[in-house]
Image 1 (cartoon, helix red, strand yellow):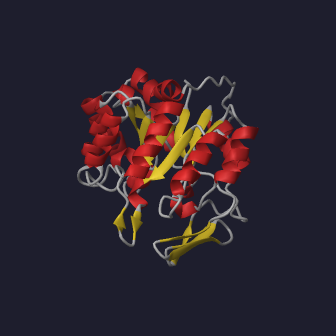
Image 2 (cartoon, one colour):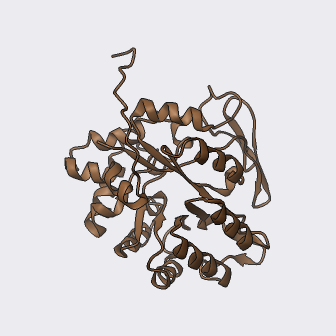
Image 3 (cartoon, one colour):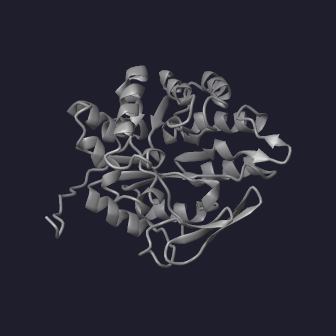
Length: 305
């Protein structure tokens, strides 16, 4: 079974400000995060460098063929590093560029990223608040960006505000740019009321839903995340399993579980058929992102086995 991770993060250092609050890499995997110290990554990553090489080691161990690397404001802009990652490991990583949409001149920055060769553009739609209000996904600059992306064959990775707040805007974007490939993240923020409205966006042929962070959203029930499996089943009943993709939200989720655990609860579930598991864990992503990587990743026994 080919396994593809459609939602992950990489950074060399977190050093940014979001909503006036600093986010800074500390030591032993910790970060200053919105005024408190949080375990951002596993404590054995003592220098805080969440690198491609560490991720590749996890991917090889967990038998994950390739990963899509998205971006989020809380990590700061990582375009320079991710461009290097894409150049060094083109068969294992598909990376997204990200502009700082909160600042004037961001559209030219986004155009430059597309010209630079980024295959995707990430937009943290849930963090588009500025002093004058929230930036609309249908504002002229956004619509111009989406037009260019559609023309250039660049996909959109987007996370939305909780519930249905931005769904009408997304419907307008989808109707205007039917050739723009769109992956909606965090499984519609599945534990929040109104999540199914985001899932229903996948009724459109150019839209997929990825499950990045689903183990975080169901962290209170923990492994084997039966609530998450139930939600995947519900979403499949609504839009079809061929519209859903697995994502881990690496590395934040592996402070609580191992990387393999972020998908093997799907493998071990008896609520999904083998074919549904194959679609969700890899086949859909291979088709959507046009992944051609072929690599032999044998299972390696643990010392405890």
